[in-house]
Image 1: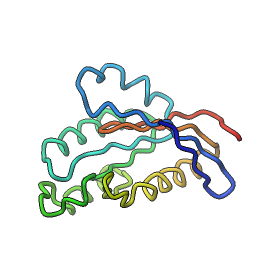
Image 2 (image 1 turned 180 degrees about the vertical axis):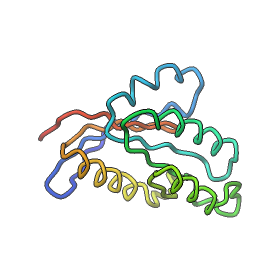
Image 3 (image 1 turned 45 degrees about the vertical axis):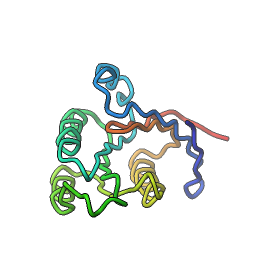
Length: 147
């Protein structure tokens, strides 16, 4: 899926890839985040296992030169929460990550998360970019883009 977004005077094209955290794609993941401007790691707030897997992705990405955001998804299922909001925020803060809770179902904070990443990424690197996104390990591929 492709989405084009305007941020101030920049136009950014997101290329969205969703592997749903499937193990069979794990060996391909490094080629998606290599040279990436930013990455969003998504976990399910109703699953402790999902949060633990997200922590492993953070560890892998910290060896790269990539801005990392952590997204706690399914915020619409607050009653089923298994991951403490403060624990997730503390983990993000300790590791220098952007943190936001989102709901893919309702759209809550989805655009805000991408805009936050774009703002941080563009201000740090001063370029327009194509961005690739995917569940559990999303990457933003850096590539000059203009419309």
